[in-house]
Amino acid sequence: MKARAPRILMLGTAPEGRGGVAALVSVLQAGGLFERAAVRYVSTHREGGLLPKLGAAISGSWHAARACLFDRPAIVHAHAASGASFARKSLLLLLARAAGCQTIFHLHGGGFRQFATVRSGALTRRWIRHTLERSSLVIALSDGWANFVRGFAPRARVTVVPNALPLPLPVRSQAGDRTQTGRILFLGRLEASKGIPELLDAAALLVPRFPALRLVLAGTGDLDAWRREAAARGIGERVELPGWLDAAARDAELARAAVFCLPSHAEGLPMSLLEAVASGCASVASAVGGIPEALEDGENGLLVPRHDAPALAAALARVLADGALRARLGSRARTTVEQHYSTDAVCGRLAAIYNDLAGTR
Image 1 (cartoon, rainbow, N blue to C red):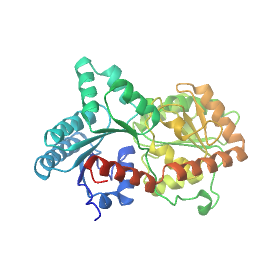
Image 2: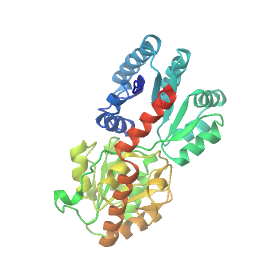
Image 3: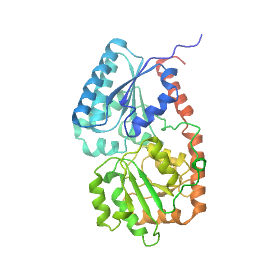
């Protein structure tokens, strides 16, 4: 007889929100994991101002705590990052363990290393280590992050499950050739830690050589402040700040872009990068977090050191000046996503993990 699927309580941000966790949860839900593994999803965070966030945290935590105590799921799977996200999830996982549940700490956010080793005091570091080591399993997005967890919390049980994208993937050529020479696209939060200052500096260096250059900074943040930063570099008229893009608008921008650029200072395995390479767009990114495991420099993308605007400008110039290179990088990156980051593969991996932890193999 086929074993009954384990009951899973999954915790994270609202799937209709923005950011990597929301994007991944939406992909897993659309890929059928929730039905396959009997997953109940509870949102403990949502986008918005202080009151909506506080309301979501209180309501989500209450529903999650009730489910742990009264429904007794086999496994509580928490998507967590730094700061308040870690605080909420670590307490809920403590409650889940007390209720006899298996627990999964799913690590997201490129800032977690800094949070765990620099920003936190001794007591908080001990609590972070305790949470990781007492979890039944820690899921990291890349081998690099798994190695960090093993070094920081030696008794933690760690496995790697990358982020996922649905297949079949959209192909840029199917929408017609709308690519604009000199158009550079960034997708994500508009903040210094994402490398926006270096990207603006690189764009200013490139303008004399590429008079058609346009830089699109798409995402949430202080748009007026970044407009002032662009103007201060003399490229204000070349920078577009459309705000956050929905899926259709994002795909349209990827179809127009000559190159996608993500010069972050720290990352996990960013969904925006996977979405870009899946579209067939050539990509330039900083060699941080799990990015070098998705992009091999010169093979399916170009990698640069973080905080290095001249190196970023040189890499962007290579791609902008060479149409054959753009096509080769985009094609090979798309193949990488199809082979290693498909929804079917990741959903299957998570289902196997659930079955293993719940003893239903």
